[in-house]
Amino acid sequence: MKKMIAGLVLASLVGVAQARGTVALLEPERVTVVTGATLDPEQMKQAIVRGGAKYDWTVSGEEPGKLRLKYNKQNRHEVEVAVSYDTTGFQIRYVGSVNMKYESKDGVAFIHPGYNTWITNLNRAISSEAGALAAPK
Image (cartoon, rainbow, N blue to C red; front, top):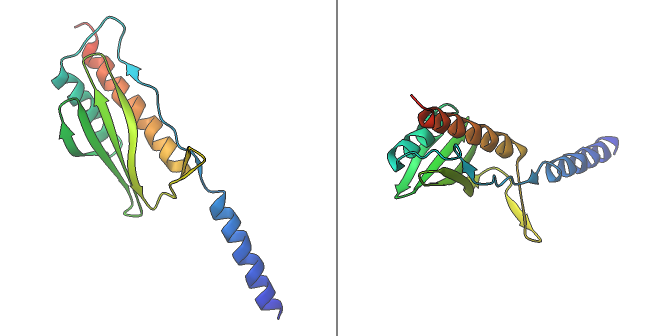
């Protein structure tokens, strides 16, 4: 009987821990590379690809002014984002995920906390690459 009660308590605690395991999904604002500087579309595309590659993001789709990037964490978690871009900046948007506990409640998206870290790193890496390309030579 004690084992059964202990098992039920443990199962309840695990359920609560999993339910609390999500955070509000981060949707970064549009990033302007450098005020007054512009890159041609190919340069911006390369900045996105190089920035993503620093953190193991791969290109999963492409159309004019937009790349889709995919990140796979140890074959357990997968995320796909769309990065729209022009000659002055870019913006990252969530597309989909696998095993990331994504859900929407009352118009607010929630996801595994790792997502926000990965997106912050991606955003910084692309900004860095684009800034380097836009810098005066």
